[in-house]
Image (cartoon, rainbow, N blue to C red):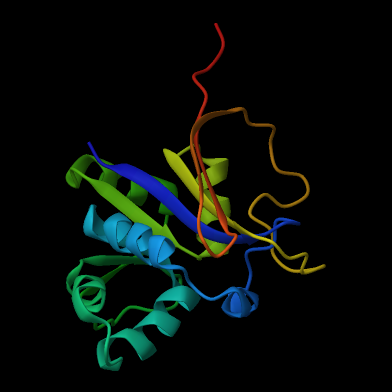
Length: 183
């Protein structure tokens, strides 16, 4: 059974939207190695429409990406969209009941189903308790406004800490998994 893994760039105040603010911190070698290993260990990407469109416009023609770019381009992609029906870049749309479609994907895919960005999709999957792991790369900046990983009104959830890693860039990786339900 597959595992849905959310991998997000977050500001200290929890903003995940349009992470252009991450560029000022550079990317340390250990951070790049982590992202490469994360992608290599995944069996599929699950993306929201806007994230897919941005990635599809950039990755297939981006030069100098090496093995990471090859992996990004070759992985099967599943795109949650109510409007797109035709896709390229090794992608297939999922629509209708997204939670049910992702539940089915978890049965069909053995390994990690990795989500980058895709805020609306993540919010839907949080509500449906379909996320198995959160890998949160926290950047040392307060953005002040924007879409948050857990918006106001999100249901209360308890998590178990799985890992903490600090990268040379000052970015901290926090990995959490949903805590088992209390009896």
